[in-house]
Image 1: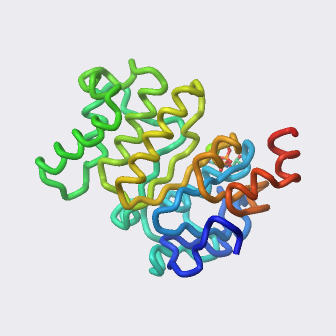
Image 2 (image 1 turned 30 degrees about the horizontal axis):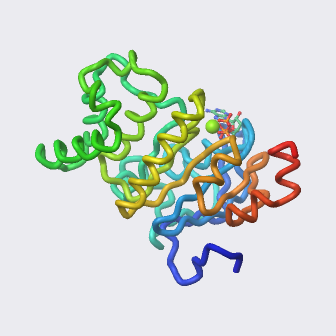
Length: 248
Ligand SMILES: Nc1ncnc2c1ncn2[C@@H]1O[C@H](COP(=O)(O)OP(=O)(O)OP(=O)(O)O)[C@@H](O)[C@H]1O
Ligand SMILES: [Mg+2]
């Protein structure tokens, strides 16, 4: 076992095994095998078009598998719809944030609890919990989402995802288009939330150094295949990876 991460005794919360899929007849993923263990933060890294978003679409049920296995806590969930998987605890914060720009911050956050059977009191309690982590958006709860800065929009997108109290949070390109100081701030908050809640997080990033500084383990995708995986320290010190992704 590599140092730092010992998952051998635990059951994975998510298992993808030999998972292949694509769009129309164009294959995008080839026999992907990955596991997420409870309470891990795992990075999925790769360059443009490698298939990172496609993996998240598979995990959230938007894109069906052509072949292979998908299990949550050992249960076969292949073919489950996105709402089925939300009920299994999966939450996908999509690339590009995709807020309702004509609605307020608070209305956007409330959308995250839409379709979940939660009482008004529970929803209000969760709202305050999220505002406590992201005071920047608490101040702007009545402001239209479309008028927020990029960083504030990302906070709303993550907050909306957390409204449903997911056990597995999948976040696509959190850092895209944001200043490093804002990215650090959001990742710090995410780590705080992770310490407080039983939550497993998969982060998708093109920036390998950033992703591996947050995650304990990582998978590298290349042309729809996982080329290498391991714990973050080993990956960051891997010479082939340093050459390919860090240019050093
Ligand atoms: N809706 C779609 N229809 C057809 N092909 C698609 C679609 N979405 C993605 N693809 C193709 O699937 C492959 C993987 O794309 P994907 O979006 O998963 O990559 P990515 O790693 O998330 O890239 P990026 O870093 O640019 O977001 C690419 O070749 C892409 O062109
Ligand atoms: Mg993508």
